[in-house]
Image (tube, rainbow, N blue to C red; front, side, top):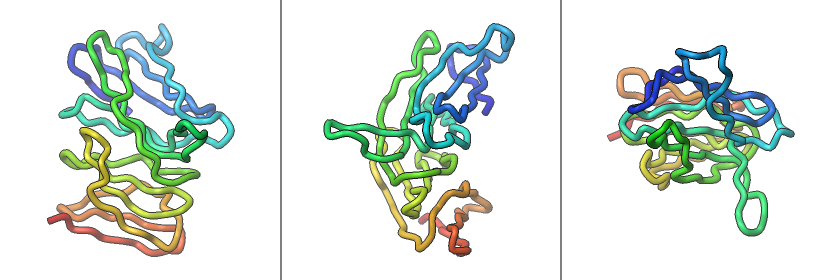
Length: 167
């Protein structure tokens, strides 16, 4: 994914199946990554790409393995804000399910995400990760959602295509 944070050179981000998010300065690719951020567990294949919000100056990474005081919480979204000096700092994280989770979709100030193995769709606040909306599905939600003409489309592994029209 290509993105241009304020006060940084143009950047590129990619996930590696080893569970690491790598970030490069696009003007100096040969120098290697400027950041290596572990977000997966290195056991399950880590797929997809992060999403970017220019308004929030934040990367949103799905399928991040999240831990709490009592251990593993599951997979979910980690929000990594770009701060001065091109530093990536976690601003929030929320578990949304488990297993393979698709690349989230940023639409204005809402981040749409899939729950992976348990299924479901979520609409989250880009600023703090609060769940604004959720919708249960019968199948797993592992495909990326899209928006066309103000309508959101998503699908589950049971073969159902869903269309949502935000108010």
